[in-house]
Image (cartoon, rainbow, N blue to C red; front, top):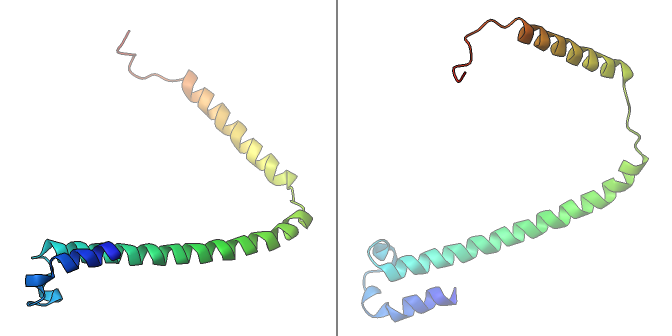
Length: 109
């Protein structure tokens, strides 16, 4: 921010007669000062929001980790059997299609 204000001070002699808003886009010193100021403000806002999210998430993780230890995962054998049957049927279908394939030959041979 100090750099932005120094840019404006150096170029103040002729530019302040028009007004800041009228000089946007026609004076590079004003444009750079506005860009640097906006970048600093956005960076500060992002740091503040990031710190608050980190602080709140860190608190949620520490309280939920105690609950995760007591939770026991459930295992459904019937669902696992269905999934394995599905994979087996896909494998047999794939081998059947590969054996009975009558398409164009390999052009590189």
